[in-house]
Image 1 (tube, rainbow, N blue to C red):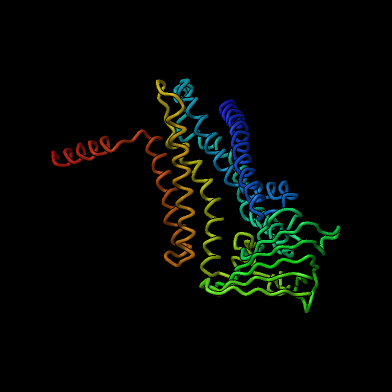
Image 2 (image 1 turned 90 degrees about the vertical axis):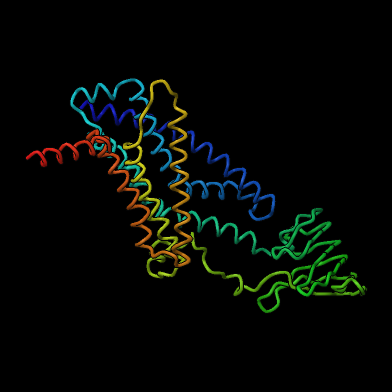
Length: 372
């Protein structure tokens, strides 16, 4: 039908243009963030492209949701502004009749959002965490580039190496400044050093050096010289096997282990899929365009509604994780409430109802009953 095909084509053009713009903005923001992580030593500079790619893939469900919402709002706004809606209404179409073509266009996107948030989101986070962990779990000497000061993975040591060998296991002219847990500060310098593994633990063996140790109260200074000195610079393999990040856990694992944080993460994933569906109803029910006004009003409403709803979704995740709300109760309260309000608003506009008209109808009916 002409009615269905014209609306779907218009939505497709608007959705494609909006998706390109949003993707470019998100890609730029994540690139700046990734470069910042690389400059702080949290990400391997050689793996920036991989980290950026996995991060962008993980953010795609949110980008698709916002793009779909904006596309529907802008398409309906243009139709109101160009009086196309009046023409369709005059030909016997109602606002509820737009729900069919809009949902026919939106359901593949909603399906992609659901699949991505349940499967691609944890996979992308897992890949990103693996890249970061692999970079951060290297030995402290391996993290250091010759001629540069570099902080250790624990944040309590600063290394400097003048030269190193090709395999990165030995260095020359080594400087180490460290702060111990009891407040003592030590400065160690050596002519050379090498990495050795002793009982599954990584050590830096220094040769021909000097060690300065300052007490926590800065009252005493102890100076010692050594021919060989060993210090642990890496964690054992057992201690490096930390728990998997919550966002990187599969949806099935969250279901099988229904703890508070797991239920909060599961509720966020389910909620994002429901949010996308609710935004379709919100866009259809609330979009009204004033021919004398520009698009800024609808754009402001779209961004405000998305940010407000998305923040409630994130806030609900923390509430469920802390036990303040149950998962089912929160889902019904937030997403069920939004769906009900959007559906009632759509019915109101579909039948052109108003509170004043309903009140006058009730008063007229009451007057007729009294007259009888």
